[in-house]
Each structure stands twice: as C-alpha cells, then as structure tokens.
Length: 334
Ligand SMILES: Cc1cc2nc3c(=O)[nH]c(=O)nc-3n(C[C@H](O)[C@H](O)[C@H](O)COP(=O)(O)OP(=O)(O)OC[C@H]3O[C@@H](n4cnc5c(N)ncnc54)[C@H](O)[C@@H]3O)c2cc1C
Image (cartoon, rainbow, N blue to C red):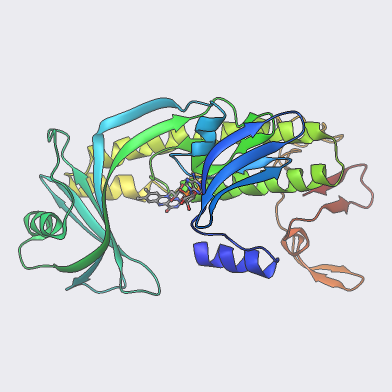
C-alpha cells in the first residue's frame, strides 16, 4: 500500500522526505511553524495548515494538547510477526485452535512472508518477549510439533488492544488524521481504511480553502469523520472481544471470524447525512439514497465524449454535478 501511495504521490510531483522527525510545533493566527530534525540538522517549516498523520503515538497530537480518551484492554493481547516458514501452502490462511488459544498465519501477497497472529492467554501476567524461539515453541504446542518450521522473522511484536480517540480532530490550524486521532483493535481491518477516508475528506476541503473557499468548510471534517471513527471503535472492540472469547473453541472461532466482515466493515454504509454541508432533499424517498449517503452506481451512461458509469464520473478528487432531467434535484459530489 505504501509503495502504491508513494508512487502516486511522486506522479503528482510530490516527494516523501525520509529521516525527518517533527519535534516541535507552534501556531498563531497567521500560520504554523513545525520544527523538524533532519539529517542536515534542525529545520523550521512554516505553513498555513498542518495535518498530523503521524500514527498512534502522534507527536503532533501532543503538541496541540489533544489527549486520547479511552481504554487499554490489558488482557486482550496478541503475538504478532512477519515471518518466513516451511510446511504450508500459500493458497490459504491457516488457523489452529488449542486450549491455550489460537495461532494463525496469513500469506502476504507478492512475497514469501507470512503475517503471524496468536492470542496470549488472559491469565498470563507477563508474556515472554517475542522471539523466533518463543513463537516456534508456541506453534509446536498449538499446531502440533513438527507441523510448521519458522525460518526467520523481519518483525516481531506484542499488541495490546487500545481503544482510544481524541474528542476533537482540530486545534485551530492543526488537524489530525488516521491513527493520530483514533486507535482501535484491528478486528475488521478498519484502521488504514478509516485513515485514508480521513485524509480524502480533509484533502479536498483543504485544497478548496487554499483556493479561496470559506474556512468554515474545514469544520465539517471533524463533524463528518469523528462519528465514523467512533462507530469503528465500538464495532471493532465488540468484534475483537468475540474473537478472543472464542479463540479456544474451533466452531466458535470459525463463527466469529465469519461474521467479522459485514456491511459495516465494508465502509459502504458510511453516510454524512447529519453534516452541515447537506441540504434537505426536495424529494426524499424511502428507498433512494438520502443527501449525504454514498451514491450508488449506474452503468450504461452515454454522453458527449463519454460512455461509462457513475463511478467512472466520480473517480478522482474533482467535483461532479449530477443534474437529472425531469427532476428538481441536483447532486454535487466531491
Ligand atoms: C496487526 C494489525 C493488523 C492491521 N490490519 C489492518 C487491515 O487489515 N486493514 C486496515 O485498514 N488496517 C489495518 N491495521 C491498522 C493500520 O495499520 C493502521 O490503522 C494504519 O497504518 C494507520 O495509518 P496512519 O497513516 O494513520 O499511521 P501510521 O501507518 O502509523 O503512519 C504514521 C507515519 O508517521 C511517521 N511518524 C511518526 N511520528 C513522526 C514524527 N514525529 N515526525 C515525522 N514522522 C513521524 C511514522 O514513521 C509513520 O510512517 C492493522 C493494524 C495492526 C496492528
């Protein structure tokens, strides 16, 4: 994912500068100054706005004094790792259940790496530090001795379920996006998706404000996106609890894993109906989308120099005006 995003950024003329760490930030009515440590020494970057997309341990969040509020589930812990192994086919995710808990490995595409995930029993106060030897012994106990041989690991870690978010995504000229503003369990695979949606939502608004739109447009970022993160936190916490609660029962775990992906995790139900940008529809119809909902697709459109679908028209960051013949409604979509 990172490579795809970096390549696209380069195509647009941008360049990610590595080895730069934001270590300080001050803001006033005119702009923001961020102090960064770079390989060349300390630098100061001045900007009209700053977006802190610097992950769960965000420095930017600390600089603008927006605390994360929530809870850490100390007894919901996982061993994680990116490992290489022998003995399994790469066409499947493999999961074993035992009285000690589950261990599973997922083949990562276009590589020989597997992502390893294993529950840590709640009654263990101090889990052993992750190492290839600890993981191999755990595999032998849970999957059966000699079944899988771990060869090496590029990353090993213990993950504790953190369920936290900020109470506001903005402090004047500084915004938070992604894990900097909300951290939650990975159940349902929502973190990166939510982060990208945050960035997309804030991106077009900031671009419009820089081009002259009213700055109040930026307030709608928090208004629209924070309820989405709140819903993701609640849903992923509930699903993670069910997975951990069934990690020692074969049938139970299958059932809870099969219900992790649903309409909510697809993200297709996300709606901004209550956003202050939304105007009431002249013709609300129970079965049709409401203003603020995701537009459905329609195929087979023909126009001057265009043949395709609604989704073809919407793809990108531009505005699209859909004006319907014989209908009083028009729809603007970013
Ligand atoms: C086990 C696991 C499985 C997951 N599976 C999924 C999944 O299937 N689907 C999904 O959508 N999400 C998943 N997630 C969540 C996802 O990885 C995160 O939500 C996502 O990476 C958050 O993106 P981000 O850009 O907000 O933060 P990050 O990916 O954490 O990026 C932050 C960046 O900021 C940089 N940075 C930090 N501090 C500074 C500083 N002071 N100065 C400069 N740079 C800084 C960091 O180096 C990093 O590059 C999973 C997470 C875990 C732990």
